[in-house]
Length: 189
Image (cartoon, rainbow, N blue to C red; front, side):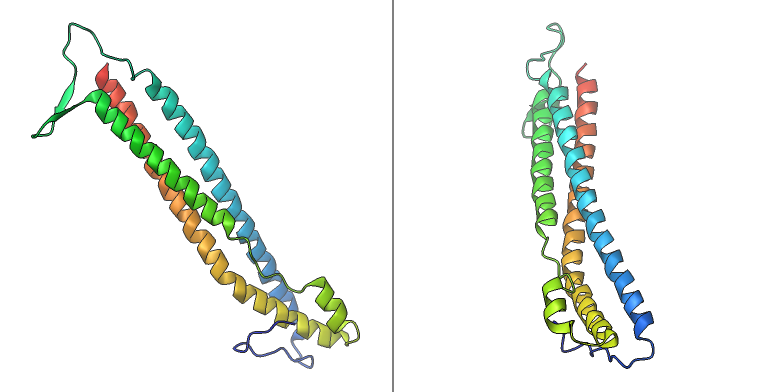
């Protein structure tokens, strides 16, 4: 079975083998749960962002031809060197929302892409290498394999967590910009 040279092998004669086996097995199961939770969180974030982006598209559709009351002048914001109309500002913010959404899609894809997890033990390896061994030797080998898988998966989980957190930040940005668009629309009325 795979074993990291930095992690000492479990002895089949260890008096605490059964306790260690159960504890390591539980930790590996917890790790699998974290992986599933990160995938769920990334999927939820992508779904919520997609709905938010669709909503902002609907919300701003009416602004494209909005000129306001013909008797009132068009609202502008003076920037010193020039000015922007409210519609131009809304269009700029909507472009930022779409950019945030594109970033969110990319970060969510990166979180989902990290799927290569070490799983121990492989059933074929168990049968080939351990079928003729004693129960204690097999258990010791399983502990070694599970510890190796656990350690190997730490970096992958860290990467998934980083990408998922970036996706969450992107949806917070997208939601904040959506609020700005809503406020600008109220200003236009």
